[in-house]
Image (cartoon, rainbow, N blue to C red; front, side, top):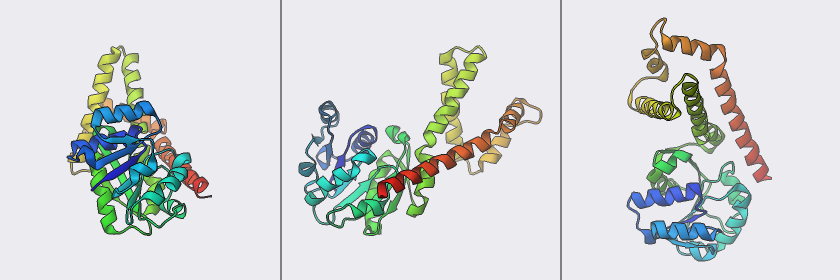
Length: 269
């Protein structure tokens, strides 16, 4: 299987790196980027073919993965589509743009799979959700899943849930970084050196995430396991409840989902 990745910014490069680590040969991967310095960096680091010419890059490949900004998506599709071989799969990791919107802009009908990854893909621990367009088959989804599993885990969902996925996992790493930042600052305010506070928070969040994924228990149970009656954790959780942190997080996720929906509507018009 060969692939052309159109746009090797943060997510595009993460995919190149993950695929190479997963055993893909450099000659199976092609890439496009408008920035000469980035093209040279990707070529030197991974040994893959990199060009500024979309038509040249997509010709003959099995899969075209589009990782550009939403405002550039349709221009890229218009340039790439006529040069793709019959049956070439299009994978879009462009936030907020539905597979139906992409399909309407295709010069020739192509199978489309829409994917919402997150930035943990940079370290091979990403969470991606994917939904197939009207022309995509289960085999196309499996093809896309093989690619995205190079940078983490994958779930396949109906596309109607994609705005919610964007709000939970797509934007979710930012929420957790906000929590980490707050905890680090709290440690400093309590007198810890910033480096020590940072190390404590990093490992605590990593360990909590590992516990959550490996333990066969609900987060509520895991939270109660560390909450002794009248203890320090109980005192902290009482403040979080009093300050409405849970309600604020739910509202934040709802706002992200609403914004994703708005972006989708604006791209569809």
